Image 1 (tube, rainbow, N blue to C red):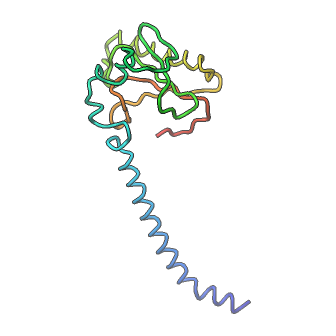
Image 2 (image 1 turned 180 degrees about the vertical axis):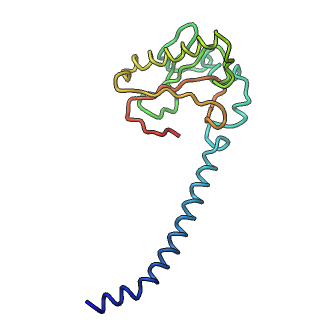
Image 3 (image 1 turned 135 degrees about the vertical axis):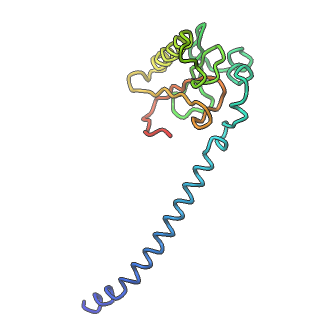
Length: 174
């Protein structure tokens, strides 16, 4: 037993040096991996999101074509001010987009003192809740998300609310 203890104690500094070397290498590699991920998932690299899309006029966007019925969509709800339809790339069992029928580039372009826009935003939230009821996720819970601008990963230059549910969602989202 003494020989084993002596061998272990004798080689301990060498083992510690080896661990320090691999730990610093591992830490550096982890930092590089995270930096690559941040770069890859930045707004300019996210599939479907680019500065070009955000510079597009809302009237020329994909959602404008859906509102005008030029492109088909699976509509869940529609009224004179809003349209709700299934997302073509769902992140959960239920993933519905709620949009105003009138073009509005995003939440950040809403005018703070415009009563009509305040009413519209409230109406979109109300429709989001109504969609949750229609989809049967109102009791189990759901999330309403608005992505705005390049850092918010907005992919279509038209205000839209994501109603997401039907599974356990995690936090934080981004």
